[in-house]
Image 1 (cartoon, rainbow, N blue to C red):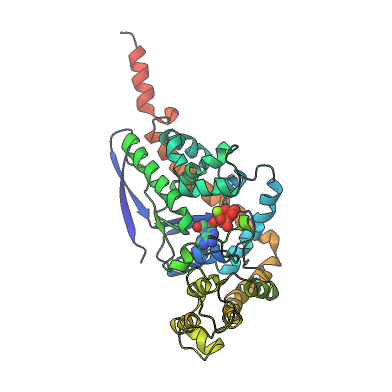
Image 2 (image 1 turned 90 degrees about the vertical axis):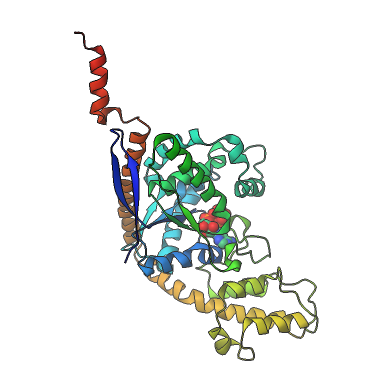
Length: 382
Ligand code: ATP
Ligand code: MG
């Protein structure tokens, strides 16, 4: 049974309206490339589980093209081309348009208007403190030339989340500062204008290795921008070559040498993907990941054996995704139709929230007969 929340909202007429709000998910990805294992463990796998659990009343999945343009303004073609790639990856992983509304951010202009109002509620210094944006600015060498749109994208993200009255945002750890920023905006908005917006919560992966999956090069995060990814649609050969050249422990030179687990990407990936049954299937000499780790740490276990094990697991995970993707690739126009329908649904929902926001901010002049009457009374001469 869907769990239902009730929320109070004051109207301009001073009445209190009780609105029936459900458990709602909003999450998404930037169409800057195909989706990779980091997306999968950080958010995508969970979204599909939550969708299939039936515990949520509404699920909105956004392809964040407008946000992607904030640091790709000179390359709109890249964003345009990748919309379909992200949509294919979604469908291949099991997101189902019958249960989840999949839409494209730029097609819901209400989001821009909300962001414009929220900008008044956030200071420049607060934006400057956002650790994820700080890292991203460094990564993109933006220090002296940060586009305003990029700098303010946490505010735009707050409008994406609140427009759908999302209660839950399944995302990786890098999104935590964005959700915190959104919560602050919601509290400030509700304090100034009355209880209107819903405060969301982030739903982080429950496995530490998935909070921020490192890249195959051992760098802190697998990221399209860093070119250290295994993509969900990579061929088995591509996956194998990525796995076999993965960063491990540079001091583990000979098989007999003791090896380190910490910071060893292959073991981090095993933490993220390995299940007990994988041992019987692919590495029956061991019973558990702890046993495998202990052997590696005391020496006598080579990287190649561990990498082959990881490769077998990743093949098992990725094979059904790749097969489903191939099927969806056969009818691309149907995917654009699905996205178009999703945009229409999303727009209706966002427009309803925007109406509430305008009403709360008292900029709904023409809907407010009381205002018109009061102003006319002021000018009536007896
Ligand atoms: P870009 O480099 O364009 O920013 P990205 O690879 O960081 O792309 P996003 O579209 O910014 O991907 O992220 C989409 C979602 O995937 C977010 O919820 C984010 O937390 C999650 N995510 C991305 N990379 C990882 C990762 N390496 N580990 C865990 N979650 C991740
Ligand atoms: Mg990112």
